[in-house]
Structure formats: C-alpha cells, structure tokens
Length: 423
Image 1 (cartoon, rainbow, N blue to C red):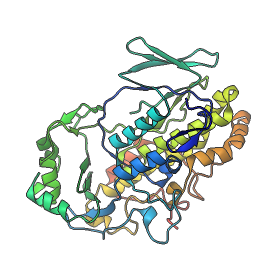
Image 2: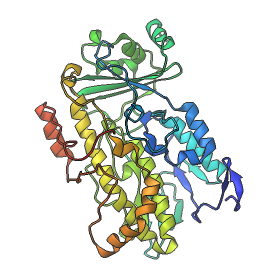
Image 3: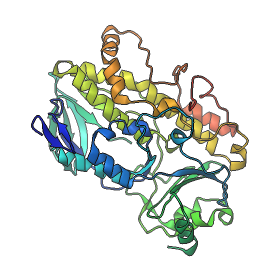
C-alpha cells in the first residue's frame, strides 16, 4: 500500500480509500477483441501510465459495413462518438479508440495492480461463496483455500498474398462487418493484428469454454456460399493458426433482478450479474463500469454501511445494464439479415447513442449515492438518470426476443422511446 503522498503511476497517490484488495484469477490469457466506448475510460485519464499503455495497444478503427464480396455497403465512417457535430464524449479531448484486445486490456490492469501492490493469485477455481452473518463473506476454492473479506466480488461470468496486399494499403485499422441470414461477422483488419468473430446458429455442439477450439476448416464450414464472400475474409479464416479459434456457445441469461446475497456482502459483477451477447457491443463496457461504480459505493458507504452500499450499486446499475442487454437482441435481429435488407432501414446498424458514451459511472455514484441510500432504506422507487431521456425500462425476456427473431422481420421496438440520438 503506497504511503500518503507517494507517487505511483505518475501522480500523487493516497491510501486506496482504506480498501485492501485481493484478486483471484482462474483462467488463462485467452480472449477476443472488445468494443469499449469513451465512458469505459472515464477514469483512465487520471492514470498516466495506463493511459499511455492503452494508447499503444488500442485500435483507432473506422467502421465498414460490407457486402459479402467485401465491397462497402455503407461508406467508411468514424465510430459514432467521433462523428462531427455529435455530443461531447466523456473523455474529450482524448481520442477514444474503440477496439482493444481483451488480453492486452487485462495485462494493462494486471500491471497497474502490481504498481499499486494489489496481490493477484492465479489458478483459483472458486466453487462456493458464503456469509457468516457478522459482516464478512468468504470465497471457497476447489483446492480448499478460502478468501475472506468484508465484501466478495464474484466476477466469474459466463499469410496470403491477397491479405498482405490489403493490409499494406490500409491507412487506418478497419472494423468490417458482414451480414447474412442468422449470421454476422466482425473482422478487425490492421497492419499488426487480425481478429475475427463469427456469430451463427448453434448446432448443439458448442460449449461455454475458452479451451473449446476448432480448426480453420471447421470455421469456414459455417459460412454459406463461400465463393461469394470477401476473399480477404476467407484467406484470414484459412490462415488462422491451429488451436486459436475458440468455439464459444452464447448462453445469455434473462435480466437478473438480484446481484447480491441476502446479507449484502457477496456481489456479482460483469457477466456474472448481467450477461451480454456480442451484438450488444456492451458486455465488457458494462463490466468495467461496474468496476467504477462498486468501489465508489463502498468508499461512500464506509465499513458501517457495506451491505447498503452493495444494494445501492445494484440500484444505480441494474436498469442501465438491462436496457443494453435488451439492445443486444434488437441489434442481432437487425444484422442477422442480408446487407441489402439492412440498407433499406433508415437507421444505421449498431448505434448506441450519446446516453452511453457521455456517461461517467463513478461520478454518477458520487452524485446520487445518498439519495439512492434513502430509496433502498425506505423501500421507495428511485428514478435513475443514466438512461436515454424519456425512456422507461420495461421487463423483457430472451424467450420474447427469440420469438421476434423467428418471424424474420426486423421491427425497431426499443429505440422508439427516449433519446437515443448522437447530438
């Protein structure tokens, strides 16, 4: 723990809010790419070393919606928060690069933990959580070890010629998106990295495991009418090294009304509390915002109000995450069609809106914590303001959304209420 006034990460640091943190990690470095908007980096500018590292590995991509053959269906464009004339995003004037490797991001946070003296223990498989009713909680590991504290946070969710030529001509990294019936493909193309994500119907053999890999040939087999697809995309698939394509079963859960234990000393975070499908473009974002919100709740609540602070965290976060979970299914219905059908819509696919990328999760807690405490303690309704203005969050279920998908007709029934605009 740094002494008061010592310099860590280029700035004067004080004791970490009196909160001692211990991290247990179960998995390896495996991971994909994630979309992170300005709101997820709201506090990053306060940590110069992390900001510098992030600037080196994040990708400042332009978006490219493509026909199957690789021709642009919509002109190349900036991500919505960089478009001219839109609302000012939360970390302006810093350039908010929207795409990063999950691995690189995790290593950045790991390095920061080391700088701040936060211990990280690997190979921990937690099998059970418990509370003692006296203000502490415990995580029980498979090997018999236990980890006890005032709060336990469970974040254990759910080389070709054509390619080299295209890459050499890139002025900027591109995030290409291709669509087909019941399928969409996200393809990050840069001079140093290639990332590929294909979402398609499950044949019943996929599992939720980072160790479940398939061959490039098996990957290519899920794409219909292969001859008509972008040759750069197909070359990228066939050139993928063996045992590097993870075949992950998407098993999203319905919105979970309760994230914490009865005693309030065990709290779920990230996918453990609110799982997202890739078309939401928000899963990693919401996990990082949880990581801004919960510590601030615990800081403001103090040791005497830990359980209350945990409940307030959920109150301030639940509606926002539920709405963005719902948006993932709307996005999927929109993009799981032929690109020519998508072009008939008035609205560009995958738009989130200023309400997402102008939000500062930590400041929101600072400004609303005490009023939220009164609502929790008094059992009264609370009006969150971290939503699109004019939008009320309605109950929804995966089953309802899947029925809409079966119809094969896209209807915009979510963003027709409230301000989802960019200005």
